[in-house]
Amino acid sequence: MRQQRIYRLVVALGLFAWGGWLLRGYVTDDTFIHLRYARNLLELGEFSFNPGQSTYGATSPLWIFGLVLFLKIGFTPLAAIWILGALSGLAVILLVDLILGRMTFPEHWKPIFLALIASDVWFLRWTFSGMETPLATLLLLVLLWPLFSGRDRGWGVTREKLWVRYLAWGVAAGLAGLTRPEFLLVAPLALPWLLWFEYYRAVGGSSNRYQSRPHGPLLAAIAGWIMVVGPWLVFANFAFGRITPGTASAKSAAISFTPVEWIDSIIRSLKQLAVVQGPLWGVAFFLVLLVLYKNRSIDKEEGDYTGPLKLGIPLLDKDEAFHPRQASEPGHAPTSIWSSVALMGIALTWTVVLLGGYAVKEVWIISRYVCPLTPVILLALAVFAEWLLSGKQVGGPGILLGRIAISSGVVVTLILNWGIMVTQVVPHARKFPEGLQECYVGFGQWLNENTAPDAVVAALDIGALGYVSERRVLDLMGLVSPEILSLGSETGFQEMVESGDWLKVNSLDALQGARPQVDARQPDGSAVNRPNFFVDRCEGPARWEGRTVHGVRFELLDTCTISGVGLREPQPWTIALYRLVWTDNLVNASEGG
Image 1: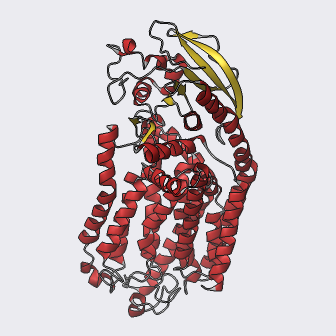
Image 2 (image 1 turned 180 degrees about the horizontal axis):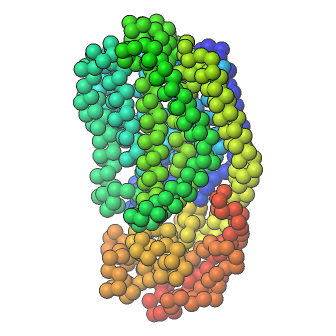
Image 3 (image 1 turned 180 degrees about the vertical axis):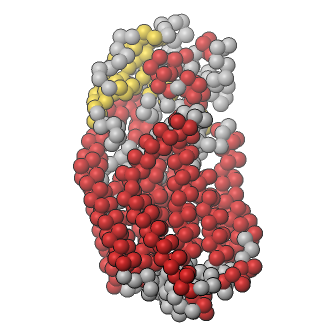
């Protein structure tokens, strides 16, 4: 391993370890949802949150399978979730380093790009939170690998057949879809760009492009994707009655057909995206314009030459351009200009589709939804920087402008990242787990010790509460409760909770005739128990104390305060535990302590 590579890895891994130290002990409530699914899969052999009721309430089946593996080995739940996240994040850094090693721009720039990825505040936050984000980031990077496979010099002239490579690519795309549900659609959208890229880097230029027939790699990629996704979709349809997770509905509204609402949603999303990677997009846009301008100038000088320009050697003659004699490492040919275009195309496609899909579904974007794209954008910057900094005749003002733009983007991004880390993320990572332990874990322990095993707890935040209490949960956001998901999708979740209509869901008398489409029965046909307890979250004083709604009296048992549930909701929240007293003659006997 060369000394320069050791240096950049030491810097990047040091930043990564430092971020992990700053975020030690950080965990989210959603992390416990993954853990409860993993525990039930391991102990009961079923994909469920509530035992005996298989539901698609987890966004990442692949992440849960990974947790099961570590739990089976013998790690504690929190250790398993931390190790899986850290290993995924480490793999991201190593893969990016491998990609950078195949680029030909100056060695002193490579540690900068790797350090940017390793110190990205959202990447660090979610890697050490126990969520699936680092694994999703890793799989997206794997899907870019054909753009950097410098050993290839054309179709059919590779270390392996192209159909073999794209069969593996299809498998990776399928795994990405099992990590984040939106990647079922988004990941395959990179394939047209990759096949276009393969066409333009065919041996000998335009005269040999007839060899670039995409049907073999295309069919292989589709087959690989189906091999992974197909069995899961069949299982999901059979076990859950749906092929997309409940989060897709619970965390979004009905499909909007109003352009004004789309624009408003996209603006909100762009604000979040700008915090994550705005300076990088600005630099990328500037470099695209500059590269296109310089490429046009070179084309004019070269006359009728239409072959793919080689980054770092743009003015070699035709034979040398197609059979380069130089490489960043032995046996690795420099990346072509077409990989730069394809990479930017993939980055833009993934971003536009994600933002557009979120806008149509009116999903409020949080940082972990978009941060897997950050390394993709940084690599796009890297390949354009390679062209600008290594081109023999780009020279003079072009190189200077490129260096100024990249340096500015790097400085601004680092300042933003560590500024957000120190002022927002680290304080949140300290306070939130304390509140989570006191409120949800504390209430969960009380419920575990003082209620009957068949008691039902209604709650807005179900992760730690359900995991620790080991009681059946009625999820008022609908993730793991199909009956609530149906009602909330119809009336709106906030309205449903505030009105108390969720109390009707498990009342068979209220459901008969009124809402026959709501399923209020277990898979075996027995009636679902009505909730005996309720854990609410609200701003200000406990809002249900002493109230009687739909024949149910709310008796306040305890309250506590949690400081913020996210960076955009830093205000204190009141967490209240109530006993529900049903005043009709159908009260369930399992009220417990």
